[in-house]
Length: 298
Image (cartoon, rainbow, N blue to C red; front, side, top):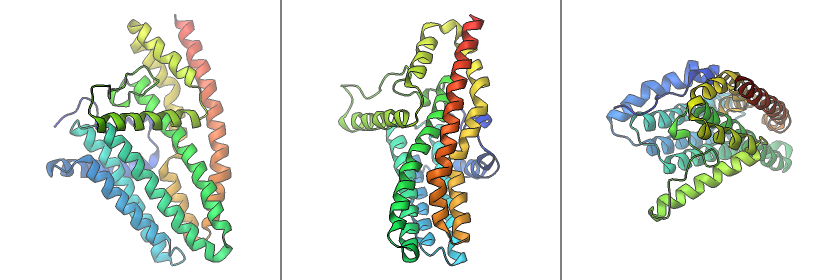
């Protein structure tokens, strides 16, 4: 079975952990899932189950065996999370339902792990553990949304992949007035989610609109524009991957092994937020250089 675009995400924007561990494992699993006719949404839900089991294990993080079990289960979730997207592209079954469900499963996994750690930690430091986890969760949502925007923009603007077509990026919604109610609702939810993603990312919606207009208005230069985009932003997207779920999984595991999960929450709030601010400033500067190079070439 073949789809209209590569099964795996572009290697030039992937981080070390995905390239060397998560995606190779997911790539071995994906053909087996396709042969068994297992739908991508079922893979997403199965991954979420691994995430919920990880939360149960981390509730007893003070026992090193449970901390290790929590980490292994979260790695299993990552593999399934990679496999569902690869399976959807392999079988050409991408859908708004799948995108919404995938996002829900991701958030449910981390919410469950944060709640489990906060519940266990509250026995040691009191109710402040809940406030710490809640603030960390809000910061996590903002940081993750910002990172996802970078990957989506790269796939759409840099590679022209139709599955990355986003509201506000020159694409048109697919759930029009004549569409059935459920797909139309999912289209609306997905559009709202992407809109919120872009707003909380702190990056310029106007710049993306300008780029979409440029691609539409000058189709004869589209190949050059996309090439310049890849050259400018591929290194940046790799740096943004420090805000990916992979490094949060690793950070949670290290903090659990050391029996200090509060340090992970504190780094989520302060450390990752500082990294986000630095990356956002760099991205703005890259957009300025990118448009300047296009104007010079014209």
